[in-house]
Amino acid sequence: MSRHLQDLLDDLKGRVSRMGAMVQQAVEQAVQAVLAHDPKLARQVVDGDRGIDEEEVRVEKAAIDLLALHQPAAGDLRYVTTVIKVNSELERIADCAVNAAQRVPPLSHDAGDEAPADLRLMSNTVLSTLRDTIRALNLGDVDLARQVMRSDDVVDALYHQIVQDVLCHIQAGQHKASSDLSYIMIAKNLERIADHCTNIAEDVVYVHTGRIIRHLHAV
View (cartoon, rainbow, N blue to C red):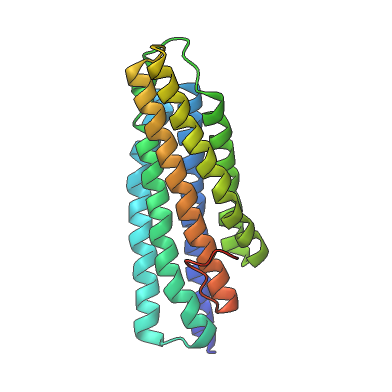
């Protein structure tokens, strides 16, 4: 491999790492805004999405240019093509953070209304999963990537529990329509973040083992 190609690959890895850090910060802020019912912090998440979108375009362009101009082979080719997919997954995670943040203003109108305990647990679980995903991506840690995939079942179970709890409140006449709708939509976006993390984790396994494990039950 030429020194120039190695430099371009290192630059691409740095770009992906920065993209991951931006997305992680967006999700962390969105979760904090949801749990604290903080519309100002939620607005920061929404306003910051443009920067993430711009970074996604820059990463994709760098990857495509590298493919077109330098024609990497074997493991390097696998890495660059995977970066394009992961980059898109990261941008979608940021979109989920924005969607969750946009549900904060209705929550802030209900004084004294705290987020459900399961939503707090789900938020912390998803944050942990996302951090592990970014770490696995940056370090090429296949074992950690497999751990991320296993954690998705926990997030799914929490999501279904939150929906069930809201339905029970509605049936008991104890619900607040605006808050309940917001909590369900927030939980759904958290569940989607975990799904995107799983997709990225699968790509990490592919890059470092050459094995495509999508749709397989055993990882």
